[in-house]
Image (cartoon, rainbow, N blue to C red; front, side, top):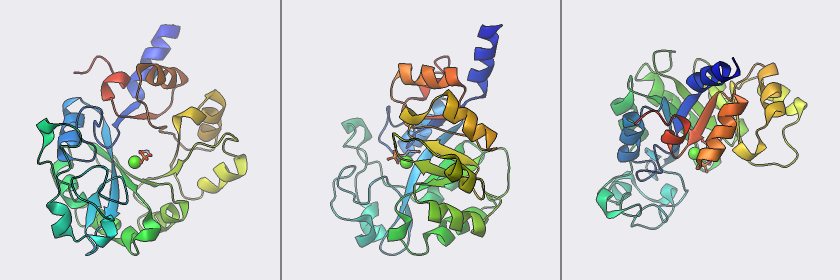
Length: 255
Ligand code: G3P
Ligand code: CA
């Protein structure tokens, strides 16, 4: 019977490809999102920032230096300049020519095909970004619950609150950086005012934190799993979703 419970838990956990299936293809590119869908992950995660001319672009760092052949801050480059960059060859030659996508392009391509976990990075650098993300969703009618999940999350909890007020129909999550002291009940209680998900660094997750998040009526998608052992221990605990560079670690039976 114990084995059956474990299997059931494994079936229900959301398999979330981190920056797309970024263990297999360059992070935050169409190739990584395609790989996530090929691997039958339930959702993929992506990071959003804003160009100088106000385009929402999908990139993790506040500069283009690490993941492209260019240099400079995202907020100081126009979309036309960003569009010219190669976001694939840092991963391997096979992916040369991959571009930095816009959030709109990703939503158009993957609506109805995959859940999408949208992380808004450093929103304090980008005035108006909450309204822009909300517009991208409402203009596509993606702000209503449908077959595929959309969740918006950020480390900036003021932003999460603002976004929730703007678009209460879209579920939101608070990201939590590693903190050896854990997450207090009073903080969890504050989160219940607006958040649906509390998504901590995976090294903070244990049975007690999981139980406390659930008892406050929220769910949890810890990050970032990069080994089979880490995936197995979170599956065993029974978390609600696992954010991983390798969707194959969460469900080894899928291709
Ligand atoms: O989805 C959570 C995780 O992506 C947060 O960390 O640095 O990979 O954006 P980071
Ligand atoms: Ca992220």
